[in-house]
Image (cartoon, rainbow, N blue to C red; front, side, top):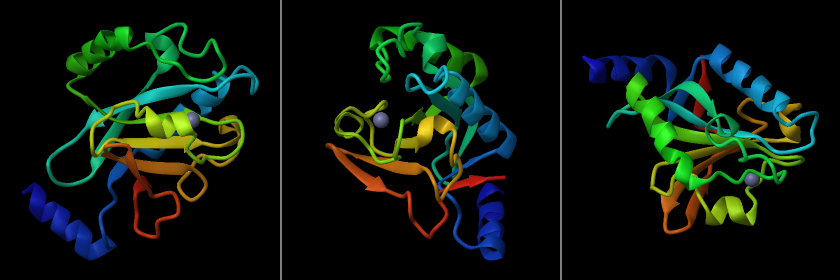
Length: 171
Ligand SMILES: [Zn+2]
């Protein structure tokens, strides 16, 4: 049934997005990331958890903020998540039946990836998506004005930020 619905969706609306999110969930999450910069004084970020199937787009269901899992994650001004805290994240995912489908963090200025963003993917597995909100999440927070990246493994990324095909779809 799902494949049929996907097909119908494709016929009606063109190519499917790679990842989707309820608009309210996304806008609330972006606003919260902005608040957690403490007045543009530090970067903030979150794991995006939700549903992922073999076919069809991933679905973001919730933002799990880095500093809720690792209280020191934002202390230095740039996001430094302690991997020893990951079991807490897996616990949340297990309890809700979700997976980590992407991550998101804010930058002071532009949404381009920093050298460390490229070198150290939050989830170093092919198919992981990473989003970057510019201007401490106080400017654009929607597709067209944000960074949208796909990790391909072995240090390679695809930049979907300016892709004409739908990537992130808010609905
Ligand atoms: Zn960054």
